[in-house]
Length: 99
Image 1 (cartoon, rainbow, N blue to C red):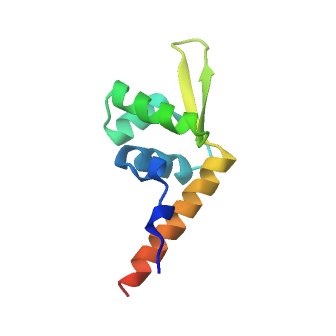
Image 2: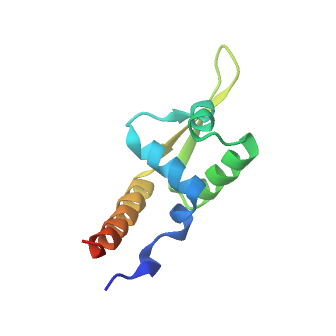
């Protein structure tokens, strides 16, 4: 029997799941503007989701300043990667029911 309560509610929301998926998809960090473009989210919506994920320490942001305008790079933390893998394992169990 699958325990649906194991689905992490922080990750399960569509916007945050999208962010976590993108961050897990490559080793290097994602600039805010690239996340925004890829996810087609407004600044405010994306920032809200990023803050929620940062609050539970699933992601981290690194602010860079240099020649041009400052930018923030986002990446998964080790606990964020672990939470994402656990989330996917529950989804795999759910999908296994239909076989």
